[in-house]
Length: 247
Image 1 (cartoon, one colour):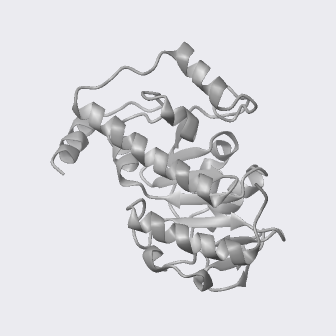
Image 2 (cartoon, rainbow, N blue to C red):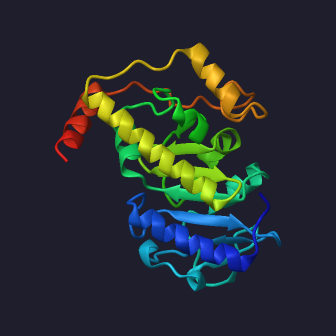
């Protein structure tokens, strides 16, 4: 899917921002979206604008260095978006969301890289979780850089999600699939847990889903493991799952 013209990108960003807010995949002022334009610039959501009321004229245009060339102040996470475009020429759209179930499951120690249902492979590939980085700082693209090269769907520890796509619709579908998967995983945890799909069948699923690309498995050269290598606090797991069960 090629990059878009500015008018189309402005309209789609406003539409998708309103949909993300309406479906509670981010709060009103949380998260950000961007699209690569045909002239080498980028369209992105502005800082501080209510996502549920986004208009095409609110969208900001920036160059490859992040300098504003049209509109107001761009999102504070613009550096993350530009890092994704630099790392992945195949990516023309980036969404940084705050999907509540996915974040809660990660905070509880859950591993979204586990494959409990086959559909997640086709919708997301392998879901990675990157170590914590301070939001709105250059530490975010620095920490996330290796993950951007290897994964299309990522969680940032204690922060939010990043989904990449050849177009904005694909990035949105991946955000939706991430949250839907997390809902299933949270529910099955509260019901006693489930065994992951056997590794040989997971390999088969990935081969069926993306036979031409190595971007969906951590086995690729230089790709980080999909989960931070830290011990899980089982007390935190149980506390968060109990809170989710009372909602």
